Image (cartoon, rainbow over all chains, first blue to last red; front, side):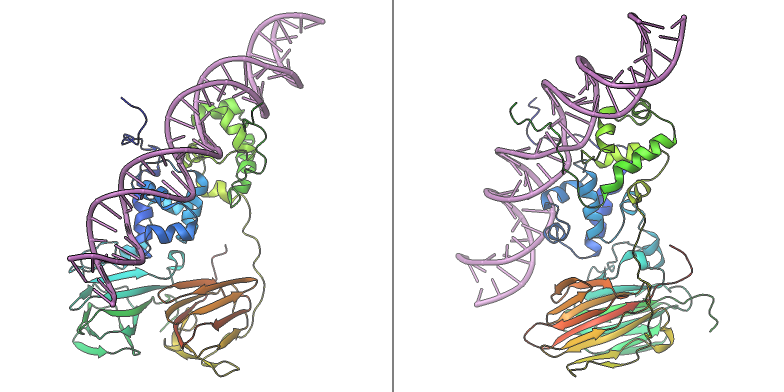
Length: 204
Length: 204
DNA sequence: AACCATCGTTCTGTATAACGAACGATTTGT
DNA sequence: ACAAATCGTTCGTTATACAGAACGATGGTT
């Protein structure tokens, strides 16, 4: 029985409530496109610990959780709740995956702006490999999507209209109808996307 | 005596934010008229530990804090908060900057997003030649500025804090104080800037 | 191919958080 | 008054959270 060794540490699940904590941390980390090393650097927590936390193999100290929450621009409660979800539900892709990855796996949306400010706008870093397609369901009424193309060539289709944008160009279009973004260029495309949600209340 | 460290362990303060945690726990416990033993029984945490936590002599694990928070009928965040938010400088200036060029003429801010949405956020395409400096007056209270660096190397100074960002990195900082952006790299720098204005209305 | 960087995981040693028991200091009861 | 209970703190021990190094796997370069 060797109690020592890094035995699996059975389901030493902290039981309590942090059950989802590991998954949440990992999801947030990936949403920000951070590696374990980077998050380690930003948070001051050893990457080995972060790895264990994400796999629920340890019962972290409060200060560790605080440092991680800070680096991930959120609060401890939010991390505990595991429900950073409200944000993603609104902006679901066809697959509805919170990770914001397109079905073909060629497009990736990473959150750039902080999650806490989400109610007025959302800001994403958009990467798409060649032929990558990102299809989106309509966003809430009045939402306008802005796509600022950093590199590559993207084609936007909204409703019946199709436009192609090149680096340095900014496309703006209604996002309250189904729309699609296709990387029609040779290489990977990179863009910054800003979703502006309509302020309800202000008349047109 | 062997330096068993059991001694005072004075500044073993976790530093960061849990600073007030001990006092808060104790205040709550007393508010409920609980003794250490009683709270221990209700929470499942050894009373010796609670004692140490209240005196900030230990850095509790998350599960411990959760158990205590539960027994005290509150949330982890609330316990952590303890302190009030604090300093929000009352400062307001005209922020309706439609288009900008820095004094040295080396930086250029071009509006990418539409002006009509200005009340919720502003979105700029930022170019700076080497050594270019962009100094900004404080924006309205609560404003947060986001700088997504596409190329080059930029240094942000806000208040007394200075950070340097490289391509692919996103910097976020309060913009309701004077701040400065400097292109410290060799070549031209390019970034996307998003100014997020605080949605007033909801206090706190 | 071989090389180099970086990814996430797994090791090893050390510091310490946790528990339960024992402790002096108060308070309570009779 | 003394005794019994209970308060909060401190002691002794065990389990483990933590940091850093080492590790194989993977991806990008020359």
